[in-house]
Length: 314
Length: 278
Ligand SMILES: Nc1ncnc2c1ncn2[C@@H]1O[C@H](COP(=O)(O)OP(=O)(O)OP(=O)(O)O)[C@@H](O)[C@H]1O
Ligand SMILES: [Mg+2]
Image (cartoon, rainbow over all chains, first blue to last red; front, side, top):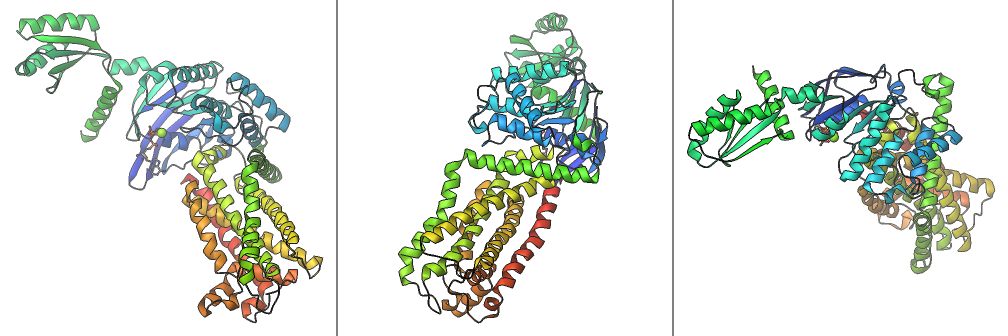
């Protein structure tokens, strides 16, 4: 449903996309995960015909975004990173306006607007200027505006950034609903949790390209899952502890001298703990604390972007 | 889900339906601008009354000290200048509307729709021209109230109104282009300031003959002066003579200047809009 091959785009000296490849099958939810400036918005803007790519090809809903933009536009809904609604007009007027511009006749546009206002819990505020809406309401209106023509493909650029947890959960529910009804969804996010919750498949973007792709489970496995952090009593033990814990877990340990910590990636959570603690005790190393935890998003990015650089250098 | 139907006119883009949709989209966007005015009546009212305030200030407070070359009442002389200034002030509204849509992402939303891209600009132009017509009607009524009258017959007066709207039409494209280049709604302040030197270096408030030599020459050739002088001529108001080439051919210049602005800024605006895709 969405196919991108080698998309490149630069802004002056900044390379926003450095050859991005992406495949999103019909009816699935794809999460584009990346830090600030990774190129997520640029990718979405190219796929939604708002921006030209310098190189590469992309097809959405069967049409080339560069050559047949009107065909693509008729089949996509876009919810941009910043709510794009007319703040002077009411929520209802906004939806009718966008419906009309999708070439629905006036009566139909009004009907669709009323239906969407109900569905997104905006019926009460429907006739107030959108400028008076809260952040969550504005997001919902923005989402509704992307759905006036019931598009088979929906693009959501950071749909929950800046929302409180409740509003975020609401948006998640709407996305699940749409997906269940068969809509193909591409959403970008900075939150691993969000991608995990919503996406069938993830693509991690760093420095303008996809550095890892797969189902959430595949990605987590590829990142070798959890980590054991051991806090030490003496700085002199750091190197020995890294060696011993690494050997026990069968992986290379990272040393953080500032906090007197050694951190080891582990596959088998309980088994690894059971191996590491006795090994440290046998070596006469005193630990003050042990934590078993999931990798943070920082570590995911660091690992993936680090691996990417290594690959390039090799 | 791939068999979900897509109900769209643009799915069958013949040339005729393309034109029809471009028109229809333009009308929808003009309607949007009208809805803005309904929602912000105070803002519209202030905009309409500001030139009236200027007429009072210049016509009554400062007018006593003004002399019109060749004789005549200063308010009779002033009003055509104020009509033209009203058209010039409109450029601020055009700029603000286009820049705000760009900054808020509304323009991007339009660009992601299967609508005719020309409609975004033509809808704006039509709405602003409508607004100009209302503003001009208010000013004509205001003129009437302070003793100004068209004295050269109805056809000539209609011609003057036509020239004023032509000036506004040209300035619409200047405003759209500036907004597409600068993109910042706040920068409208720059325009609000710049319209004054443009006004004062024209014959809108003071006859160019009574200005110091070089300034008089600038004022004589100021595009705004062409429209103002032509309007004085067509309304039969004082101060339209002068003897310089520009003053003698004011009507021709009042047609030529705006057409030149349109010829430059309309294509530039369209190109700039298309270029938003980078
Ligand atoms: N119009 C532009 N002009 C100049 N540079 C741009 C432009 N748009 C994007 N960039 C640059 O391209 C890079 C990628 O930006 P992009 O907005 O695609 O990232 P992102 O992943 O969406 O980030 P964020 O999470 O902050 O939204 C950044 O370095 C950004 O500064
Ligand atoms: Mg972004």
